[in-house]
Figure 1 (tube, rainbow, N blue to C red):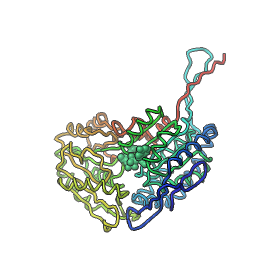
Figure 2 (tube, rainbow, N blue to C red):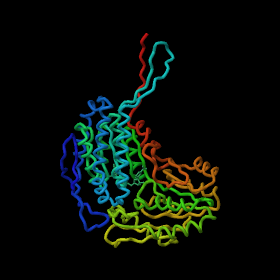
Figure 3 (cartoon, helix red, strand yellow):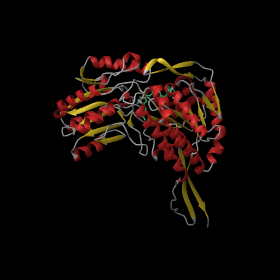
Figure 4 (cartoon, rainbow, N blue to C red):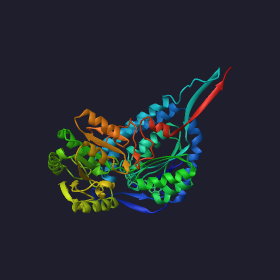
Amino acid sequence: MESRNYIGGEWYTPRGDVIHVKNPSNTSEEIGVLHLSEASDMQQAGEAAQKALASWASMNSGKRGQILYQAADLLASKLDEVATLSSLEMGKPISEMKGEVMRGVHLLRYYAAEGVRAVGDVIPAGADNVLQYTKRVPLGVVGLITPWNFPVAIPIWKLAPALICGNTVIWKPAEAASLSATKITAILAEAGLPAGVLNLVIGTGSKVGSRMLEELPLDGVSFTGSTKTGLQVAATCARRNIKYQTEMGGKNAAVVLRDADLSTTVPAILSGAFRSAGQKCTATSRIIVEQAAYEPLVDELRKEVAKLYVGNALDPSSYLGPVASAGQYETVRSYVRLAEQTEVLAQGQAQVDPSTGYYVMPLVVGGVGPDHKLVQEEIFGPVAAVVRATDAEEAFALCNQTMYGLSASVFTQNLSRALRFLDETQAGMVRVNLETAGVEYQAPFGGMKLSSSHTREQGQAALSFYSQVKTCAVYYG
Ligand code: NAD
């Protein structure tokens, strides 16, 4: 497959650099070609989105919803095809990838239904014979910048609410998810989106992403990616007074208290730390354990990590596949080298020859203090660090000892400790006896501290971001 740009309802191949995409599960196999855009392609996308705005914004929202329902049906009918492409492109195991595509279908249906739901409130007026009400209206042209780790769900959880609210969109996906982005755009186009409503521009962040932010007449920007990039995005948007949201990195903790039921705790930690090869913003990368539970927990982790099936992303048995790219492999390997200098508590083994792809074995390390790099920096790979705490009090304090605040979980049977954890933890998504990842699409998603611009995505929260409120008053006396 080859990536293409989709601008003003036309497909074309931009003239920038060409990248040959390798299968991360088997790097000797080429699975596609990317054609990168020049800054001028972004300019054209801006013009197309501006041109399409008035008629899309004024279209009956029920009709906009019908197009999203149609896109949902098309995506459902191509579930296997889309999931296979994304697994080949960025290495997420096929079983998980199918679940992610299904999440995309649910998101499209959820936001399609918003086309016939209320868009405001009637508010009693102080004066007589005045009807006062609010009405949500579109922002205008919105720019979406997405990462590669959820190549289907993250774009759709931005696109669907942006479109149902009546915005037109310019989408700059991550390079490592550009084949998937081309496929998703084709599905939305086939569903009947009018020309110019969605414009896809394939390219690098430094060239076309920054051009979009610096120069296009945008009314909103939604970004998901690293904290480093997100802070630059926020600064540019703030300078230009563009409404923005940035969902960024995490260093999420599973806090295990002395009374945790290990039969449910260990599978939740394994899933949080190692599914998607640890490349989820909500992945468990710190395991903070109360002293009394340390030995039994580590014994269980040692046994269970050794059993994890590390294999080709298209192998339905794979619990985790490779990491997504050569760059990602180098970064994660540098943390593994650091981890090997500490105490390795548990390590997995590959069911394939690891030299055939970007495979990193699941790893649990100990012997690190709360300030160690492995405990403070986002690794974004299958590496988790165990930190001991003398009691629940200290465990909760350690959980908050990070610049991030995305998600956190506690494992305990004690109701009062669980509720205290939910109250005291500085994270946007806090959970009891559940893994740190896996927040549902109909619930708000986002972080505190340096994980987020303090906005939320998904659920009803997304509608607030992609619209602005007008307060209307009518004197009829
Ligand atoms: P990244 O920051 O490198 O890139 C994200 C996107 O920004 C890509 O499309 C990239 O091309 C673009 N970009 C890069 N530089 C840019 C610039 N100067 N101007 C405009 N755009 C630019 O992140 P990544 O490696 O793709 O994704 C991994 C990161 O994403 C991790 O830190 C992870 O925690 C985070 N993430 C967060 C969430 C969340 O909801 N909080 C969800 C998924 C991933």
